[in-house]
Length: 170
Image 1: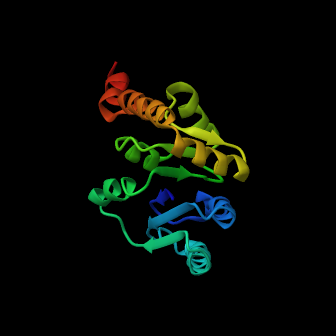
Image 2 (image 1 turned 45 degrees about the horizontal axis):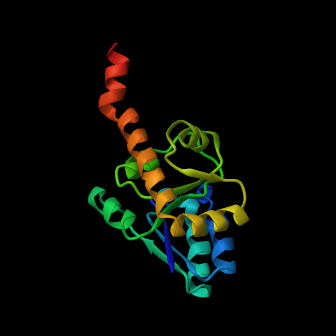
């Protein structure tokens, strides 16, 4: 059983539909979704997730506000963090969870592609089929997980608040 997770605010743009398609095809991949209703317009997304949770044995949904200390707890409950977003320009959540050094798979969007190319801190994918394949490959490869961990460390070190402040003071 491969445990994947999407944490943080529940919004439609996070791409739950993409990973749900993977879950429907592969019962060995499990997903934990935990977060709060950030925007009242996201209620249809929560309704979708809750309906799918009733249909699928490999989906767990927890609707709750996460305290800062809980992010690490939930990040460490899973083998792989997922960011299958439809749209994004930057991700405070990605920066936040980078400190936990969890293997991470993202959708191929410019922000994440830059992190993959510059730091090796994530794996980007272009399709649901590739997402499924990369989850399995990453789960089965300690070497790949360690490479991502090193990339996350590099990303974290080069984009920390201390480094950013020093660059802007110069």
